[in-house]
Image 1: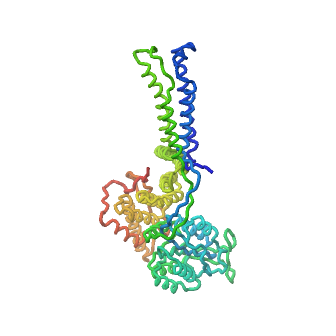
Image 2: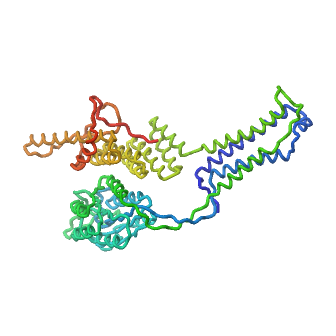
Image 3: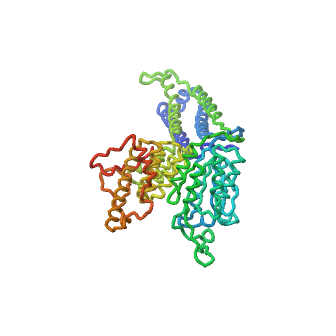
Length: 573
């Protein structure tokens, strides 16, 4: 059965083909009018056109067929199948996901489990040809999905994961690590890296011993914590408004235990991340996975349809040559006007349809709806019609020739969302653009994500995004300036806290803290001030060290009167 690889452009190609045929029809009508003006009587036209009417009709048919064949070739027709061997190469990712009832707590909206699933989806979609496997655990653990290259199958297993997946409730991190150890022992894996996603509650206390055994096997465990320290009530089931109660009738509360997870990561040489506030830690995990050794892990037989556009192009060339060689008429030498020979007039008239056809076919090949939609979106963005620009970027995603282009386009869409004040939507699109594989797009996406976090007054996540941008390009000046602004703001805040403590005689923290959020726009303007009620407002010591390390080779020198150094949103394309 035949189909078309460029079926998305079907409407445009048909429209362009119709325009070409319309031009040819207009040309034919014009030619008839010219002949009637030169030879009003039928006998004069018969003498003027000494050629065969059959040849003239044949030339018309050939021109129509040329337009049809070219349109078909542009659509890239395919039929038949070919079989080839596709070798798979990439990084293996094994995830241990906590599905205990405490993961239903809603201190992380919509729930800890749903946020964890979002993180796993993001990691799996960023493998780039690698394999993904999944261990589910609660009071027990089992291998839910063996290592597979089939992203669809992995997502199906992930979507079905829930509290009911493991019959025995509770949380046994040690059992999860033991199950993962068996997978590493039985499979040839390109990287010995385990990602453990949980709220950190461990009812059995066997995690330390299991972590030591994994270290002996050379496995590094990267722990991902989710949940708040204060915790939240544990629902009886997904979507339930009833909560779990203890023997005394009190509501069971579940909080995050980062200490256990930090010890596991430290014991095995991994890193610890937190995705309670956002998924920025997942992107650092993705880069860690990308740095692992990539090996070939087998091959598979792939059936593909065979493209046959070459046959249409060959037929098109033959028919065009045939049409040019067929004489439409032979003009009588005595019909001369203005000193131009009949042969010259004949050559010009015969060349006219070929010129028109070539110009129209060039127009067909120039059509690119993806480029047009992106260009229109950028124009609307420049006119500050941000909703309209977002619609155009969304329409362009349907025509993106490659997934990489679609990921880059999400950067522009994120800009439009940001300018509309939809910072969560902007962050989602900036995260998607990180999969583009283009370092320039990635660093700008991280920088703009930092600006969005500033607007949300999440200063810890903002500093993390700027630091990640500097890891890609240590000389990226906008990120350096915004980080310097955050550090200065943090220093002022600490000074105010010390002063408040001295006045109170207790050294405590004052009630009010100054905070500021950058919007990423240039120009001299006063520092934004507001009350930051988030505990994550400070930059940690580790982040400050990372910042100083990235800035020590090229310190930022800011001129007096230049404002806070924050920049306009970086824009791609």
